[in-house]
Length: 308
Image 1: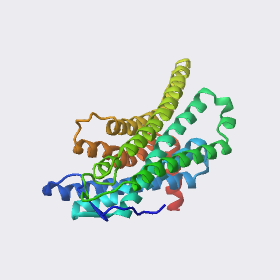
Image 2 (image 1 turned 90 degrees about the vertical axis):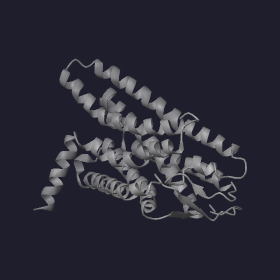
Image 3 (image 1 turned 180 degrees about the horizontal axis):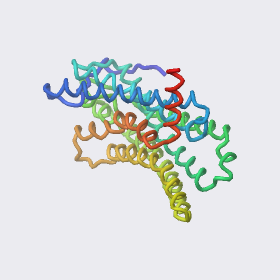
Image 4 (image 1 turned 45 degrees about the horizontal axis):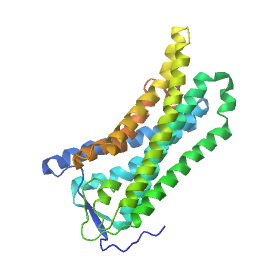
């Protein structure tokens, strides 16, 4: 994919999260801390899953991929954002399009990996006797291939349409990253095709996951309510609780970003996108491990092997 067009603009200026000088340094250290925690948390979860055979199950296979996606996701957005707190944040045209591509790729992957994880919980709770067949290694690998293919298709659709635009004189992006809405505002030709593509791609990325999540958790809820044992219900709820929190956090912030009223300001866009691009990847390792006994056991075993 050629990263060139007929634009006279060869580089963009990212305005960042805020223009207030007194907040730049505190925000730099805040988001540096978030980035470090995100990297350590996701990489740590990846290492635990790889090193501990009892975590080699479909549930942790998908969690491994979620952590990998979050690890990459944070690395696409946060380092460039941190630069903006220290100096004028200039990004070349090709770097901007590359960041847009990988942002679209990983955000789409996140949508579908969360959807696949919901289906996995449905299979485990509602069809436990058939679980090994329903979620065989081949099925799991095929699902993950589908996740990454959807990410590739969505990223190519957005980036290809953006490369067709012409940017004339305006090169100031009122954001901390090369996101689609602020870039469309800078175009000096019609963006109607781009807006249609955004509508279709975002629509597909919302409708398919939302329907799958709704159906999966509706069936899970009915199944849990039919369990007579209080201990059984509690165990079933705890298996899904972490995933429900993660799904609500990601889709809630994304929905606010892309289905906001037209009167919403650019600052509101930046704050809402920050939750699913920066804060979410940091929270996921904690959401999935704090009350997870399997992860606690794996951590103890790994630490014991390290110190013996």
